[in-house]
Every structure is written in structure tokens, then in C-alpha cells.
Image (tube, helix red, strand yellow):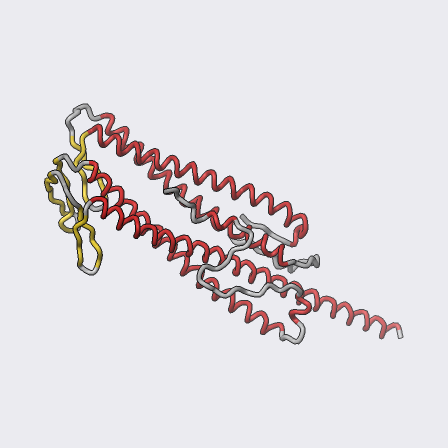
Amino acid sequence: MTEVDPYKILFEQDIKSASNIPSVTFISNVDDFLKDKVIDEVFNRLQEAHQKYKYYESKLTNNVSLLTVRAKQLQESLDIVERVEKKKDDTYNVQYELSEGVYSSAEVKEPKSIYLWLGANVMLEYSFEEAGEVLRKNKESVDRQLKETIQDLGFVKDQITTTDVNISRVYNYDVLQKRKQKQNKGREEEEEEEK
Amino acid sequence: MSTKNMINKGEEIIETEVSADDQKLINLFGRLNNRKHELLREKKVKQEELEKATDANDDIFLVDDEDTKFQYSMGEAFLELNKEETEEMVNSYISKLESSIEKIDQDLQDISDKHNELKVILYGKFKNSINLEE
């Protein structure tokens, strides 16, 4: 099984949302865009969008770290299953945790099977092959979710950047417009004076 | 840490239209920038782990008694292993860490290459009306 790097997607020029998160509209022409719009309203809308995506971003970042931890734990479990299987003809001691910080010793004698905690207070006995299979399957699903979340996070980051740029462009446009008005006014006044 | 078009309050505002393609490049820059900082954090953690593992390896080496049993932490339990087995486990852990650090370095290099490429294009077009923070 070859490991696919879930972060590779971030190098792509165009990134799409894996779970249909709406995208922001890129302003192709500020002049056209601002026609028949009140500038303060435009600003408010852009800020709102910015906040919304920031919220998405923190949510997704959180999910990525949760899933990364989950994948790591599953890999650890897989390693343990593999290790115990390797030692299935041996007898050896294991220290296991009874309660927080309290350990007891147990002798493992030629283990034939292994138990997986499935959740909801259920534990099931598995052969080593089956246990590995179950864990691998779980890990595959976590890896897939992780990959999608990373993709979504990349997408959301793009939306934030686009919104940032939109805000600066509208802002710059506004400043420029006001400056032009001022200049025109100044010129008019000069002309007045000349008369 | 974000990539942003600087809001120019200053005297000069250069009117350069941002095209949809430019926007994509800016997005790519920002996205990779985020990843870069993540990778740097990850690298630091891995390096610390590696240091600990190397220390452990040295300590195991110092144990003279070949019959000493080691408690190898696995999940929530400890596995009792002899010296040889423990060394094998620690060494494989170390090489795993080393290769993942190598991978991080490679990724960082890739990002830096891409960043330089994008900087040439974007600074070339927008001059100092864009600020590509890292």
C-alpha cells in the first residue's frame, strides 16, 4: 500500500471544495461591481463573508488535528497487532494500566487472538488477520476524511485570501475615487477664482 | 502570516487590475504559506521526539546486563522486551522519524521553490502594491 500524501492537493492551482462549501465571487472589475451599490454595504458584506470563512477555517483546522490524531492512534494499534502477531509463539509479560497511573503485570502466553474495543462498551475477539483488516479499514476511512478536510481547508483559505484581496481592491478604489473627486473640486474652485 | 494585498493609505496607488488568474496565484501563495508554517511546527515536534528517542537509544546501549528486560510503551500498555528487541524497536522508530523529517524538508523545499516562482510573477506585475508575507 503506497501512502498518498493528502497535502499534495495544496500545490494545485485550482482547489475545489470536497463538501460543497460555497465560494466567494471574484470581482473581475471593481468599477462594474460597485455600480449601483452603496460602498458601506459592500464592505459589510465582504467583512461578513470574511468572518464566515474564518469560522469555517477554525472548524476545519480543528477537524484536521482530530483526524490526524485518530489516524496516528489507529496506526499505533496496527503496529501493536503486528507486534503481538510476531510474538504469537512466545510467552512474555505485559504491564497494563488498571486505572490512571496504576499498572499490573500479566503474562501473555502464545496469544491466538486479539481484542478490539469497538466502542459503545463492546469489545470483540479477532484473529490477527481480521483485527488488522478492521483497523486498516478504519484507518482508510479516517485517511479519506482527512484528505477531504485538508482539501476543504485549502479551499476555505483561498476564499479568505480572495475576500482579503476583494476588500483591499474595493478600499483602494474608494480612496482613489474620493481623491479624484477632491481634485476635481479643487480644480473647479480654481476655475471659479480665475473668473 | 497571511498573504494580502496591502491596503495603500499612502500617496501612491497604482491601479493594476487583478485578474482571476492573478487571484488564483495569490491564493496558491497563501495556501502554501499556511502549509509551510504547519510543516515548520511539525518538524519541531518530530525533532524533539527524535532527540528523546536518540537519548533512549544511548541509554539502552549503556546497559551492560544482556538479560535486562525493558518495558516498551505501546498504546496504554508496556511490552516486556529484551535488550536486542528493544534496540530494534527504538531504531526502527528513529529511522521512521528521520525519514519523516526528510519528507518535511523536501516539502518545505517544494513550497519555497513554488513561492519564489510566484513571487517573480506577482511582484513583477503588482510591484510594491502587493505584499507577499511569509
